[in-house]
Length: 188
Image (cartoon, rainbow, N blue to C red; front, top):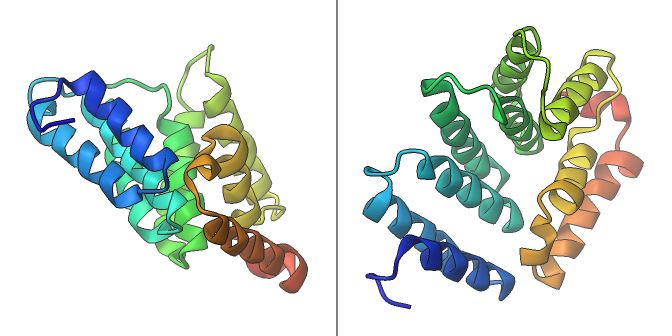
């Protein structure tokens, strides 16, 4: 693919690179997509930021993923759309907790709480999930690393982009958070 490739194909190219565990090339495609069409099609910025967040999660760069999730949900906040904001804020909060940034985790879960209180009858399943994670967190029953791993495996399928070594590293982090550490220490 070339730099003149239409945006749909650039997104597909990025996922192809990610499937081949070439995360830096996948991220480069998303950045290229942002530069070429992000100013014309602002809604596409949500997709590019979200994909950059997930590619960073696949690389176990939790701290970097936080900023991309925040940028993604801010696209919807700016146009007063509610859908997916709680889920992406939850994801950012979990990633921040996994990165050891309690303050940023708290700020993102505060957004989940704010959106939970907004009137909306038809929250999507991802947002309902975020509200359930928030409830577990408020009850003191949340292990952020375990919840983040669940999201990575089952909700975003980020593990498909991970090398066997990265998967072992993730499994080790989950084991340490759940078996090696007390759950009360893990609550963000």
